[in-house]
Amino acid sequence: MQIAIITATNEQVEIVAVKGGWSTIRATNSLIRFERKVRNSALSGHAEITAQKAPTTAKLVAEKLAKPAVTVEAVQEGRKNGVVFAGYLPQYEAYKALTTDGATKRSIDKGDNVAVLLRPLTLSDVYETVSSAANTSVADLRERFSHLNPGMQRMNLGNMFRRALREAAAATA
Image (cartoon, rainbow, N blue to C red; front, side, top):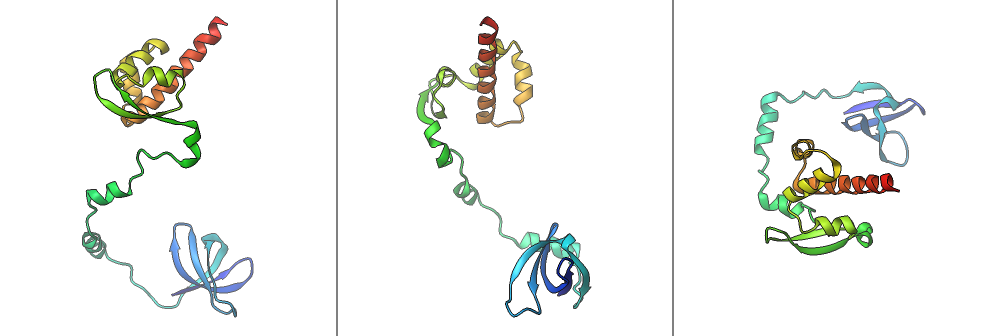
């Protein structure tokens, strides 16, 4: 157990836990017992009351191996993919779209002209459509968005397409 002094009030407290730049403290000499978190920089005069050994590397490895493995079912159960935050729902519409390759997929979008145009296209077709509108090559676009998942690629390409259409409309006006 460690004790410290809160610099601002000169109050002696017990340090319960330290994580990152924060310490959980407990009052030691007040009538009301409380626990709260404070920045480590707000504490001074740390004194070790009982010495605790730091765990060895072998002990840390053994503890990690003793933890149960995460199953695929547990990960899938905790996933929120496909769920839109309820506050955004009035802005979006959900569809079942038939793609040009014959597959049926779910689509959630704003339902604007660009979304309606891109909805039935496969990801490869979206790349081709956006590359012609934005005057860039498909290879450049694929390189730019290769680190993203297909949904994020599609979203970013849709936004690029919207921008290209706005710029084209502004140039003609």
